[in-house]
Image (tube, rainbow, N blue to C red; front, top):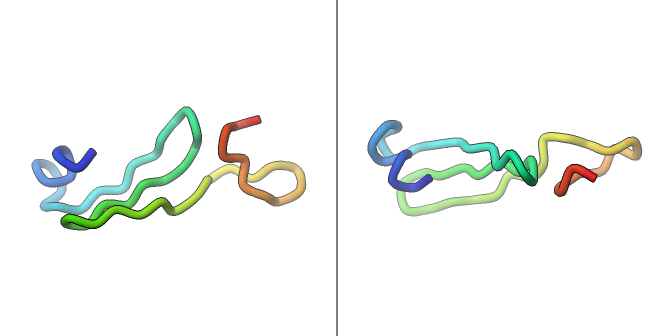
Amino acid sequence: MFQHSVECGAGTGIFLLINSSIIVVIRGPRAALWGSVYLDEYGEEDKDLK
């Protein structure tokens, strides 16, 4: 992901990890997990798509 963000996004990239539905944000040498984009029936993150 880091290499792709450098080559295609000038060091910036936002990626969705499909198996866990977590978003990874990369900016330069830093990366952060944003959290899950899917919520379960109780409004909580559904990190492993259960």
